[in-house]
Image (cartoon, rainbow, N blue to C red):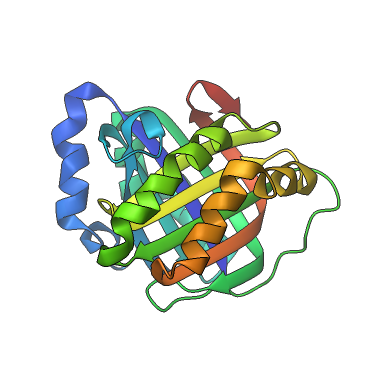
Length: 225
């Protein structure tokens, strides 16, 4: 299996169309050849991690059975053409998982990639937060998330979510595994992870590392080819 992440910032004139994505959910993707898993995701303000939602930024996380079907979706599907024509910025990346712990709506990742010995890696962290633990989780989250966006070697960091406050995800791309590991072992992030795991904050979680291939587009002014 091969994962695809799509990040989009919509032009203001298309905010209504953008919000309709949440209402329609998976429906526009039904019948997509080879599509095995779909998540339509919102984002925090300015693509960040806080509780304030963004009116213009969204994401898709998809799993395909083959790279050919992923390419067909990215390059020629009617839906991607619709996203492209309505976007101010659009970024996509194909991802091969080489490490996965946990699941997302019962779906885990088949490991196919290899940990890169050099060059970029990507990470996805997602969790369903127990309602009784939400307040404590969000008390620890902001310092870790702020440090992520400022971390050395971080090329992309975006906060995503299926539902406000309780179903959250973070996607990031790093210059190297070393850069990501240095962040993962840093103060604010390490404290947040220890608090979340030790406090039983999650009813379900998934932590995946990927080998990114064919990253392209623009996100927050940064161009990828």
